[in-house]
Structure formats: structure tokens, C-alpha cells
Length: 481
Image (cartoon, rainbow, N blue to C red; front, side, top):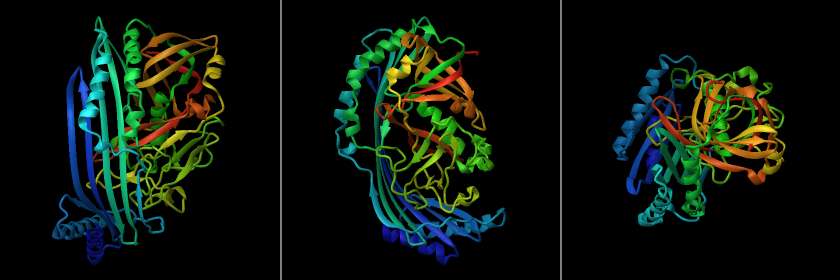
């Protein structure tokens, strides 16, 4: 692959590129699912191709191909330069790349068991066992379960001298049960609704998940929700479980801090951000106990890598420190717009045929010092919400509303009755400033988001968000409140 990568880079430079890089990517995916006692899907896919990105006359050019034939490589590299030259005629300002030390390195996701080495029959045996357990009550009208795994081998070469060989592996699993009665539908998912639990790990992740053991509880909760009282409306103290905080962090902090979005580059498709440039280093984003850390090195994170698609090494940094907004998510092209001397390594693309863009890394709310039982005991009147069911947020990442699968009332410091259809809403900085308690590291867990969409054409990226249960005061809850 190194020889083919060098051919692409050398061709682009010979054709006039001031900078060139090539990403050769080989991807293998497997996704197995069941529904109501039958196979719902078997997806096995493989792809191999490359993308050439260049700067010529100050403008970007990009071209890709699924053929690694030498003539096709040279033709594609030349086409990328032609596109850059054409783009230069309408550019507003020349591309400026932050410096990075070119590395020659190899990095691989640490795993114990290759997920592709595990027989499909073994995987389906587990899925069918979970499915059968979920359907032991006739009020469960739909039971589904899945196991998925991905293997992505990347080779990145740049005209600056970098050559990086990365092997990224991810595995995930989960299930859900839908209960129906008199036209009402309630769903419970495990371990989370947004892709179960997915991590940069091998099949050891699936074997560590007590899927079959948890199925009876999830079935019973789905049925019980049919008879539960609805979530009340009004102002309440809310404690969010990490399965819900994961999406809260993602939507109201992750996307809000993407520098390309701040600069208006996502405006046509997915909006901008309220975190405008003058807010860096001074804006009170949350209460003093709120610390949100981006980390592309954390074990198991779906965005845990050795290097991003700019060849920038994985890093860890504060996005929000002691409640103050501190840093954006950046790449080499835009780092200087935030006043940074170097990129924080957030440039990633889906596959070989897309150009890299800024993507959310692993982003987590750091733990506090509360025990969960003490947090409940310290809450006189509140609602504990679990597992995301729906989300909506405006074009500037300010006004949001989330729905959860299940909630429990808190009265007099004790968990009480089950509540169905819980929702809450707020304004991002007001919400994070209302956070007055976070549970400790014993309750902290990293949750994967395997399906984040961004860009035109749409690209899907993966990342993880960690948190412990956290408490927020005076939150508007309930439908129509």
C-alpha cells in the first residue's frame, strides 16, 4: 500500500499541488439482527478504495476511486489537482494548514477477540435466546436484537512525509422490546437506545454484556410502562442517567463546539452554533462543577484513534473547564481561526470517498464526588430519567427538547413510582448552569454513538460520550409544559 500511496502523492505534486495526501481504506462490516424470532437481517460488506486530497493555488481539490490500478491512481490524483485549480478561481481566502510533525507510525485498536473470528451461528444463538426471553409476555409485540462489528484498515500518506497505518475495530450489541395495549406503544431498550453499547473493542465486549440476564427486566419494564402514570408537567429537579446524558452532551455540546459549524460551514444543512468566536475562554457555559473533556485516547471510545485524517496525533483537552467554555473542536485548516497554533485532531471522513471534516471526538462529562444513593437521598422532589427516546434541538444548538423511555419519581429522597413518556426541555447554557451535582467515577461509563450524521454529502461518524448520573435544578418537564 505504501508504494501505491506514494504514487498518488507524487502524481499530485508533479501536477502542481502544493500539498497532497491520500487515504487508502479497506473496510469490512458485519451486522446481524433478529426480530420476533426470525432473522431480520444479515449484512456483510467489504470495500476498498482511496481518496486524494490536494491544495493547489490555495484551494482544496478532492477525488476518489474504488480501483487501485496504477493508472487509475494517477488519473484520480490528477483530477484532484484539476478540481483544486478550478476551485481557486472562486475561493475567498487561501487554505492555511496548521503545522504538524509528519509521523511514520502504526496504530491498532487494542482487542482480545477478533469479532470476525466468532462464528455467525454463535452470534445468532445469543440473539435468538434474548429474543425469546423478551417475548415471554404476549403484550410484547416486537422484540429485536443485534450484534455488529467493523474493521477499518487505513493508510494515510502526505506530501509532508507522514505515513500512518491504522487498524480500527469496533463491536456493538443491544436489544429492545415494544409493548402494546389499546393502541398505546411503549419501548424499552438495553443497554441504550442509540445503538445499544458499541465500543472500540473486540468481541469481548459482547461477551461481557449480560444481555440474556437483563432481558426479563427490560420486558417487564416495557409492559409496566403501559400502566404507568404519565410524566407530570412543570418545573422539576431532574437527574439524568448516563444513557440520556450521552445524547445531551452530543447534541448541546459536541455539535455546538465544532469550529466549522461556528464559522457557518454547516449552516445550509444542519445550522450554526451559539458558541461564537468571542466566547472562547470567557463564556459561562455551565456551573463550576461542569467539566467536559474531549479525548481521542480514552480506551474503548468509538473515536479513539492513533491519528486523525490530517495525521494529527490523538489528544485530550478541555472543551469546558470549571464551567467556562475553553476550546473548540478543530482541524489543521481552521485551527488558526480559533487562535490556535495547532490542530486538536478532529478531522475525520466516512470511508475513502468523502473529504475529511471536523467531527466530534469522544466527549465526556467528568465525574463529581456524589454516590448515586446519596444523590437520590438529597433530592426532595424530582424525576430520574433513563435512556433516550427522542431529541430535537434548534439550528444554533440552543433550544432543545428530549424524550426518555422511562423515568421514576423522586419524593422525600426516595425513588418512587414509574413514569411514562418523560420529556424535558431547556436552553443549553441555562441547563448546564443548573447542574449542581454529579456522581463519582464509580458510576461513570462511556457510551457509544455509532450513527452521527453531518455534512453534504452526508457522512456518518462514530464517537463516545461518558458521564455519571447528574442533577439539574428547575428544569421544565412534561408534554406541553
